[in-house]
Length: 88
Image 1 (tube, one colour):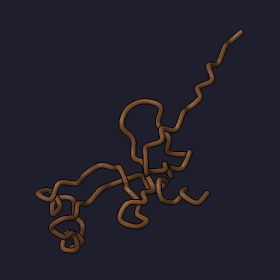
Image 2 (cartoon, helix red, strand yellow; image 1 turned 60 degrees about the horizontal axis):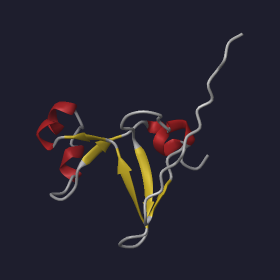
Image 3 (cartoon, rainbow, N blue to C red; image 1 turned 120 degrees about the vertical axis):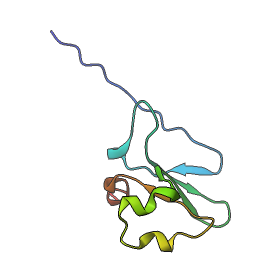
């Protein structure tokens, strides 16, 4: 007989933030892309993803998109499902 462990995942709550990450993107271990809803400075989302350093933007081949990134902004990369599955 095989025993399959059931892993229950507790969503960590942070004061002033609500996790909005779709269940399809939950991770059990390690750092994972995530979306949090924040009430600071009005309603905003905070997104955790892979930072694409400014000095490598042209190497990534963004077709000029790097010109849209302001001085106080960064470009992050997340799996498409993180956003596509948000409302599911």
